[in-house]
Image (cartoon, rainbow, N blue to C red):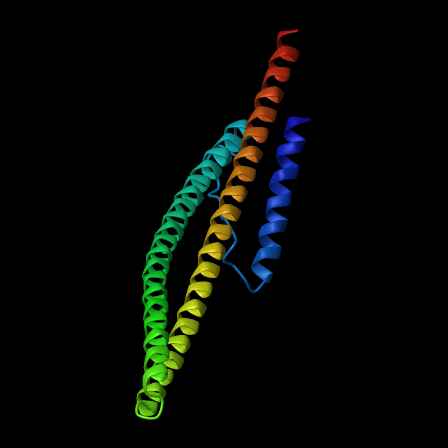
Length: 187
C-alpha cells in the first residue's frame, strides 16, 4: 500500500510538472531534484523530498521575513512622514489662526486702509488650506500603503503557517505509516 502511494505521488508530480510546463507562468513552480534513492528505497526518496520541501519552506520563510522587515521599514518611514505631515498641519493651523487673528484686528482698525493686507492674508490662508489638503492626502495615501504592507505581511505569515502545518501533517503521516509497517513486520 505504501509503495502504491509513493508511485501515485510520483505519477501525480509528473503530471503536475507536465501541466506546469504547458502553462505560461513558471514563477510558482518548484522543481525537486530526483533522489538517487527513488528506485531502491521509496521511503528514503520521500524523506529526501520532505527535506527538499523543508529547505524550500526555509527559503520561503526567509523571503517572508525579508518582506516583513521591508514592510516594517516602510511602515516606519510612513509613520515618520506622518509625524512630519502632522507637524506641518499643526504649523499650518497655527499660521492660519495667526493670520485670521491679524485679519480681524486689521479689519476692525482700518478696514479701508488695510484692505490690500487683508487680501494678502486671505491668499495666504487659501494657500495654507491647499497645502493642508495636499498634506492630508499624502497622509491618507501613506496610511493606505502601510495598511497594504501590513496586510501582505499577514498574508505571507498565514501562508507560511499553512505550509508548516501541511509539512507537520505529512511527516506525522509518514511516521505513522512507518510505525504501522514496523508493527506488521514485527507481528
